[in-house]
Image (cartoon, rainbow, N blue to C red; front, side, top):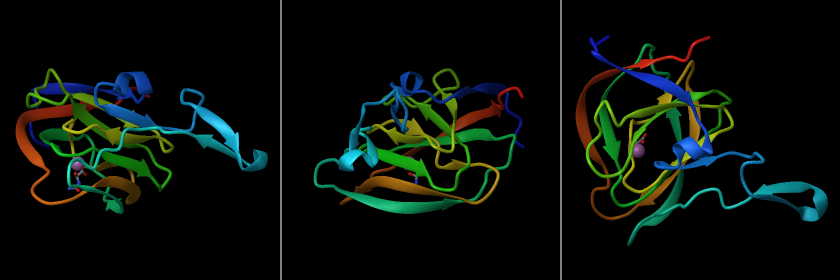
Length: 169
Ligand SMILES: NC(=O)N[C@@H](O)C(=O)O
Ligand code: NI
């Protein structure tokens, strides 16, 4: 593991804490929901602002991610300047989400790391800095909603290494 003088605490993923970076996709009482289909189905409604960007097309894919080895060191981040990108776990396992606000490139001071539950998705708002998929424990599938379109839509930056500190317990 790269020696990392900086360390980053892992936080639980909540709608409020993630607000500067995008939305959390979850079926909970924290989001608007209502009953449909004659009482058979509960609809957790309009969870995120999906933006394919100008001239873009919203597409759905499945990402099959290999588990990351822990302890993990963050040494790069990316952003999609033209569109949002949403991930929803399909394999029933938690995963890590490392983000920084849109705008200036991330620093150790602006990075945030969240532990997402097996029933929590995230939507990175357009331009939100994030680390590529961070699956844990086993090969994991994720439903991904993002952009297809002309031209590049991924800026990458390298960082001085930042080690992730797993939550206690
Ligand atoms: N490259 C790609 O489609 N994946 C990344 O954007 C990612 O956030 O995992
Ligand atoms: Ni991405």
